[in-house]
Length: 432
Image 1 (cartoon, one colour):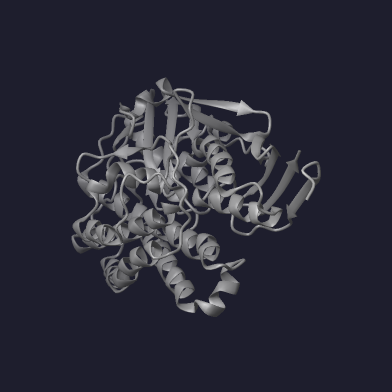
Image 2: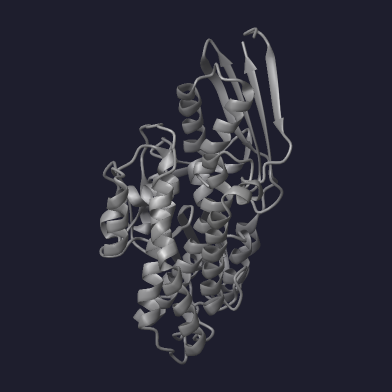
C-alpha cells in the first residue's frame, strides 16, 4: 500500500447512529493531522419557535425535539418554567416525574444496548443479523424497551411526544389499576435488568483508556436524574444557573450543531460520566450488581459506556418499582401556577447526558428568550478528541474497513442523537 494513496470509504447506510453525519480524517506518518465529525443537518430553530409562546405550549414544543428522549426535554423545561414562576412542586409531583423519567432511561438505554451497540461487540452488521444467533438478547432488549414505553405512557398518555405533563404537575393522575399492571411488568423485568449488567460486563470490550473530564448532576441522596448540582471530577460544583459562567457554546465551520466546552476544553456527559461521579448513589441492589462485574471506577474507557447503560437500566427498574409500590393517585394532579415575569433554569440527566435549559418570560408568562443545550452538542468536541486518540491507539496501519468500523464504534459509545432523521455516515481517509 502506497502511503501517497488517497483512499475514500463510504458507508451508504449506517442504521446505528441517530442522524446524519460524516467523518473525515487526514493522516500522515502514522498520525492524524486533521479530523472532523461533520454534522450537516440544517438547524432546527426550536429555541426561536418558542419565543412568544405560553408556558404550557413550551412542553408540547420541546417534546418534538427528540422522539427518543422527549421526556427529558419536558422535564428540564418544566423545571425552568416553575422556577421562573416561583413554584415549588409537591413531593408527590416530584416522585411521579422521577417515575416517568425512569421509563425514558429504560427505553432509550435498552434500545441502544441491544439494537445499536451490541452488534459491534458480537460481530454483526446489525441487530437483525445478530438476532439469528442471539435471539434472546434481542428479545430482552425489546421487552425492556416496551416496558419503558409503558411507563412513559402511564403518565404521558402516549410514549412518543407525551402530552400528560403540565406546568405545576400532570393533567391527570394515572389510574391505580393501570399503575398496578405496570408495577407487575417491572417486577417481572427485574431479572432481565440484573442479568443485563453481568452480560455487558462479559463482552469483549476494547482496552482504550483516555484522560477526560466527566460532568454530571449530583443529588444529595439519589442517583441523579431529575435534579442536582452540576459537578465534575476536576472539582467543579455549580448551581444550575451558574452553568453559562463555565460552559461555552461555539460554532465550527464543519458542523451546523454547536460545540460546548468547559473552560475551553472538551468534556464528557452521559452514562459513564454519571456513573463515574455517582456510583455511590446507586440503590443497594444496583451497587451490588455493579460490584460483581469488577469494573473499576472511575473508568477512563468509553467502551465501558455499555456497562454504565446496563447499570442504569437496572437502577431505573429498581427505582420505578419502589416509586410505584407507594403510588397513590392525587386529584388534582397539579398545583396552581400563576404566570409572571421571570427567568428560570433547568438541568436534568437525559439518557445521553446533562440537558440544560434557560427561559426568560414576560409579565404574561410568554417566552421572550430560550436557550437549550442538549447532551450531544456537549459531547461533540469530546467525540472528536476520542476519535483522534482511539484511532491512533488502534493503529492507522489497519485497512480502511477496520478503521471505519473502529471509528463508528467510538462514535456509538456516545449514543449521539444528531437528529431523529435519516442515518448516514461517510468516512473519508487520506493517507500521505
